[in-house]
Amino acid sequence: MPRVHAAKGAVVRIKQKPEDFSVKESYRFDEAANGRHRVYLMDKQKLSTFDAVNRLITKFGLKPGSISYCGLKDKQGRTEQIIAVDGADVDMQEPDLRLKFLGRTDKALSARNITSNRFSVTVRALSHDSLAPLNLATAEVNRLGVVNYFDSQRFGALKHGQGFIAKDIIRGDFEAALHNYFARPSELDRTEDAKVKGFWRDNWGQWDARVPFEGAKKYHRILRSLRDHPNDWMRAFLQIDSDYRAMILFEYQSFLWNEGVRRYLQLLLPREHMFPMRYQAGTLLHFRDASPEVLNTLRDATFPLVGPDSTFSDPKVAEAMAWVLGREKLKLSDLRIKNAERLLYFKEEQRPLLMHPHKLVVGRTQNDDVNRGDIKVNVAFTLPPGAYATLVIKRLFHFEYTEDTKEEVRASQRPRLVATERAEAHVEAAQAAAREAEGPSRHRTLASHSTRAPARATSRDPRPGGRGERVSV
Figure (cartoon, rainbow, N blue to C red):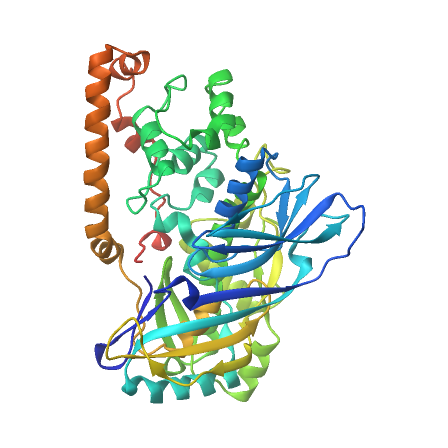
């Protein structure tokens, strides 16, 4: 659970309850009475956009890529967004995922269909001492805006120990990329998907092995490719859904953007005007003041998401990106993926350097119904597509902000995980006893005669180096 350490070491909390973080899209689409795409308002809770879409695809037997959407919404919280289903009518009315039919359209949805996002965030565990710094920070945000970084949610692969898979791709090591994608289970994940990943970690190369867990169907196209072409790692990697492949590259491109902007601000602003803030992939720099000239420059500035053919007209942007690429031991030309340029590519585009929250409202304080003796406050604001509300919250409560370390996350989850592990051990023991009564099975025989030791997985998945992988969440 995200925390903000406020004045005097107090812990400020967000997302303690799903309704504490609410997002609603403002959208538009061209209605067509006989359009092939059915448009729905999707109301989801504690689900990522990928999770929700994959559930719909699985339940209704849809083809991969048949559901389009405008953008990705946070897993933690309750969010509303529109989706479009190509050529099929669907309905879902479950506690964590609901659909409302809106109409039809001729075209798949994209980022062009969203105009803004309205956020409502409840911040908890506040003390009265927190309010004075909050008022000052609110005035700063209204005057200066917020640096438009990509926040921790963008870097889920780092949180779950996969590293930047894009680095494997850039090196041309598609076996390592595949291994990090579907054979490296997260220490924080106890889902069936994590069990499937653990199985392939321990049985890497045994592509005919039978997976004894639900959720294996997600990887069936990859496994079919590996069975038919066992040494063609690129071919197998390209079986991953195209949206997710693009996200793998965009994750690393976003990191390069963050690092470039951080360095750019260092070139423009004096140190005393800036303060650091830790996040999933390292450290971000925000600023609390700027000269009128610099502020005018920043207000209208964009910064590039780089590709192999990027050029820089601003000398300071060029200097900042040269510094970042040097640290990453890269040249821009390395971002061109050999033999897969049309299917795996870093698309260059410009991203605004600052975001300006509109209709920023800090509500009246109330008694905190979750943390006894503390107070809570609701913060509401509107952001353009692609901007991160969590950054606004962190900027407002920037005083001594930190996020939980991986160790703290595990410690906070430990009581629940211990109970889960005990229950799983009990089930597995019962299943083992039943199997012994039935006699040997093909799967157990195959696993016991595996010709490749599980340790090989460790030797074949080099951790990407560099600052970005030393993560604290």
